[in-house]
Image (cartoon, rainbow, N blue to C red):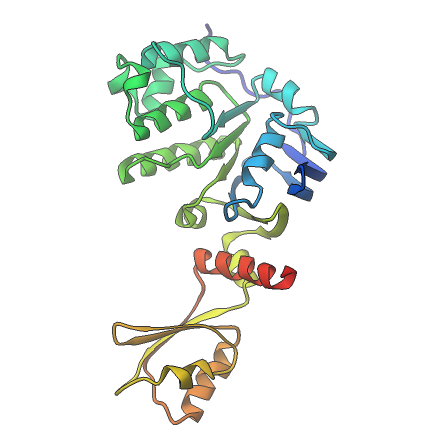
Length: 311
């Protein structure tokens, strides 16, 4: 086994390339006409509600599924060839870990099989599992299993790291350490693609956000661009006296209304018009705050708009 990992010898324009990729399972279209490129050094979040096609997209990327139409290329070649060359590491939700072995035995085996391995002890320390090296794999907690999966995904000098819900089951400290390591990987020029339901992670970590819905790519941009795409603003204020919800629901450009804790919270597609109308009704809001949507609110707004469009 080598003790250091060799650097890539060439740099391609696109690490991952999907060209008009579609995949169906019977009558269910999991992915439809997906076209996108991922580039070196990007950290990309893949978002979407359940059934959006995230897992199918990752399966196609890793060569676990074959597209019905279109093509998937990694580093200019097939997913299978890129994986065999040791250029791709993956941490998936599906599939179990080998039983009847210790943590260090399993990590050591994967390091030994990798074309460009890191030292086993280095891999374990980076994943935060060196203290459980001698424990049997089938005796681990959910969070510990996730960290072992992370170690296996980063056992060698992969140029692309694919992560499916990577921090599920991890505590706050483990999650912070995990993302610190992922930032280091990206700073070294590696591409990190992760699917997550923790939208705060996508907002804080990702350079780029992809939003899938029913197999289609709805949005592709920075977190700030995705928020702007939602085209809505959040308005919060206090009112003296009782609040007539029916009056507030009649405000122009309003999409959501929530009243509680002494405050009114509104989501509006035209904040200026909504606030102007408040005063026009003879209402006098106090402590008024107008802000852009968070990524989670923007994500909900974008997917709900698509649901309404296709209903």
